[in-house]
Amino acid sequence: MMEFRLSGSGGQGLILAGIILAEAAIGDGKEAVQSQSYGPEARGGSSKSEVIISDKPIYYPKVTNPSLLLAMTQEALNKYGTDLQDDGLLIVDSTLVREVPARFKNVHSVPITHLAKEKCGRELFANIVALGIITKLAGSVSYDGMEKAVLARVPKGTEDKNRLALQTGYQSI
Image 1 (cartoon, rainbow, N blue to C red):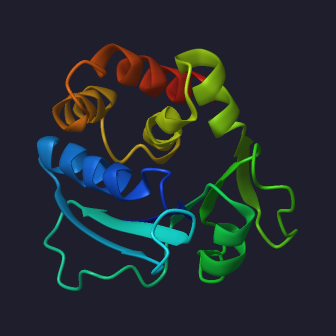
Image 2: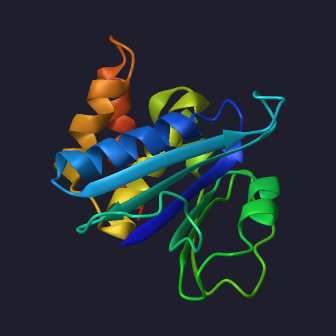
Image 3: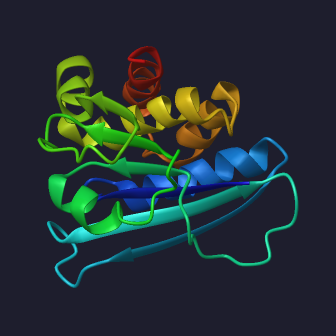
């Protein structure tokens, strides 16, 4: 079983990313649950989406000890990084996260927002770039399953850019 926490600020598409991650797992024949929360500010306030993926039934739907944390902002890392497993995987957006405490051992620092803007033309693809990175590093869902889930959820007419965003993230590691 893997517990994922995707965190950042409202407007970065992390709720959608969590939904897509869960749907990719289900498409791969696994069990998955997804939950979310965001501050009252919505856009700009803190935001998190949590996903549990397992080969067995999931009896408790809340993430209690994440095995993977995606931190898209410094505030998100500071707020949501406290209970990451000791050997947990930390993925930070180096575009927006400047300080990673030394206690984190398994850190992948990737300029996610920068890559989204450079390769796809807009920062709003950062959530899909992040999903490509998660797909590669976590190994909990297949690339094909993730691509199908992404394409099923993104707005019509944006499929090619989102496919590129997923590939960009996957190949950045």
